[in-house]
Amino acid sequence: MRVITPTLKTTQVGTKYFDSPGIALLCFPSVDLRGTYEFLEQLNCSDYLNDTPLPAAETVCKFAGQLCYKSFGPKRTYNADAKKYFDSIKSQGHGSVLEHVNYGFLLWGVSRSFTHELVRHRQGCGYSQLSQRYDDKPRFVERPEYVYDHDLHTSFCDRIDNAAQDYDEIAKWLRQKHKGETTLERKEVNQVARSLLPNETEAPIYATFNVRALRHILEMRASQHAETEIRRVAFGLYTIVKEEAPLLFDDYEVSERRTLSTAWRKV
Ligand SMILES: Cc1cc2nc3c(=O)[nH]c(=O)nc-3n(C[C@H](O)[C@H](O)[C@H](O)COP(=O)(O)OP(=O)(O)OC[C@H]3O[C@@H](n4cnc5c(N)ncnc54)[C@H](O)[C@@H]3O)c2cc1C
Image (tube, rainbow, N blue to C red; front, side, top):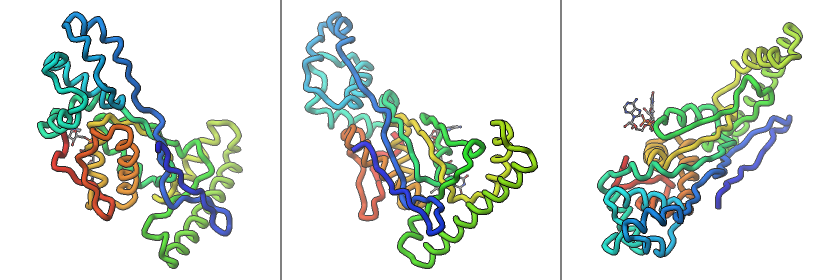
């Protein structure tokens, strides 16, 4: 599974919103070790290429790690024991070998407050986010706490209906004042009108993480101390990458509340 799809919902007056995040894994590693044949042959270790295959992410990280000690010969850790290999990497904090693999995710149905927290993670991460200066059709995100509470849900719907209406009104007024026809003029309208949008405005973002950085994010953001929305996204990221590269993420314990913990934090 590489996609978690949310349902796009509408209030009674037609304001669009999400009540769960969308997560699509778009970029993931592929690897072709055949290019190492001459290198391994010159070390009399070309048998390395006959080992049982592992998922691409694990193959890359294991090869990079084994390069450090030229561990390609018969005394090396074979792929059948790859779990032992990665447990050793993680327990000793040799996390730099996990920086060789990147995953790229489209995240949508997520709020501006979520992305503000996410982008605090800088090391090993890259982001491209929807600009509110180029978007004049804001959608919104309902917090998990509101979804099953009638009063909170109703007040959320009223609030986003009002926000959408206020946004349209001020944008219309600014367009009349400043024409709002060229791209520059539209941008100048949107950049003013967006100032009244709430934190619960949707803010789609494309995010790339290397595995070392992603593990740190999971530990910080899928923890019991993390904020609810980012915790839900972090857990979704975990469910996807755990299938892609089980041995890079198999040390995480999952609680009943879908939080993660590990004995090997911040490898
Ligand atoms: C529950 C929770 C509550 C929070 N509350 C607040 C809050 O109230 N206010 C607030 O401002 N922030 C808050 N944060 C954000 C937090 O302080 C971090 O900014 C955020 O989690 C990013 O993590 P990081 O600093 O580890 O950065 P990352 O970019 O994920 O960095 C990973 C690691 O790289 C190293 N590193 C990164 N950059 C540098 C650097 N410049 N110099 C040296 N080493 C570096 C550090 O070891 C760092 O841990 C909160 C986070 C959580 C999880």
